[in-house]
Amino acid sequence: MNTYFNNLNPDIQEYFKILSKEFPEFLLDYINTPAMQKQAEISVSCGTIYTKLFNYKYWYSSLDHSIAVALIIWNFTKDKKQTLSGLFHDIATPAFKHAIDFMNGDYINQESTEDLTTKLIKNSKEIMDLLNRDGIKLEEVCDYHIYPIADNDTPKLSADRLEYTLSNGFGVRKNLFTLDDIKEIYNDIIVMKNEEGIEELGFKTTKIAEKFIHNMTILAASYIDNPTKLSMQFLADSMKKMSNLNLIKKEDLYQLSEKDIIERIKNSGVKDLVECFECWQNTTSIIESETEVNGKYGASITGKNRYINPLIKTEKEIVRAKDISQNAKRDIDNFLNYRTPKYGYFDFEFSV
View 1: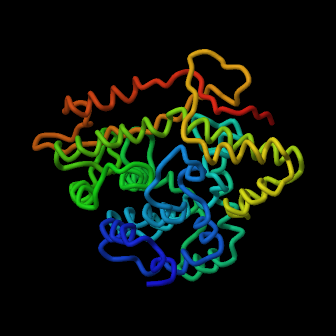
View 2: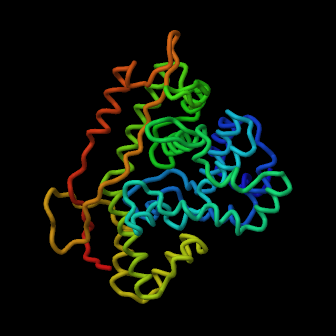
View 3: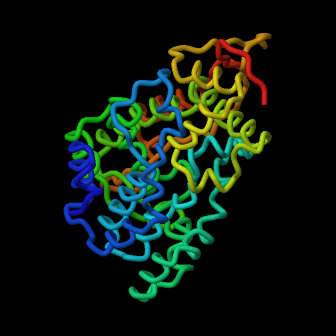
């Protein structure tokens, strides 16, 4: 199809084919714009892929995620505007993704970078030329929140939430789903009307919904475990230190690749930063405690609860999984009650 797809891991290529049997050709020109290609250099792992704390099976970029979201939207809507809104939804993602929300103090919502979406699309001559060619207005594609199939509020099921659950469970974060599992889950999903009369993705089969929910809650807990939160905070503090020393500017986070920024850190000449960053990259465990530990780099952070309580269509009604399935209720409640030790620490000292 093009160089981008030819370079994808074959498993990811097969995954994309499940999401949409036909690839919408009109997307290719948009994918190949410099503004979208920049997202190919950003990992969805929020930078955690660069430490030995985690064992990820695949490199999966923000561009990969955005294309996959677009494919899901196209599969269920066949609507160009909604599909493009999904493609563009992370165009304002900086290096290290939500770790920069931590830098901005936005631990809970993790939306501090989204305001730039319209600006980045508008400032891309290539994208604007394509939109003009296709007779599409900027305001029709710059905010995917206006399309409920693309995005909606937690704990509803949207294309975005579905995609990162499937890909993260397929080895991007944990090995929970096989391609056959994904095919079974995806083929059971249809568009239905929720309790508010708004379109939403949901399941036809309770058993398949339960399977999805069980693995979703395992992933949801992993997003807010201490190794993840602490790594994101360390990356945020590393960026702050570089910024305070005038070694990096905010705009660099949107222009440089993650690997370029890591090289800049390693070549910064800032002894404690260089040494601590290397320690973080090579560490395989953290210290967890309910009380503060002196002489270590640590934090106590409240993470964003990302979970899904999807709709299930029965013979008589459409209901939320928790209201019809004891298994779903147990798994979701277990996640909502999940708590980490109050503090997480790395075995080094570091200050901004």
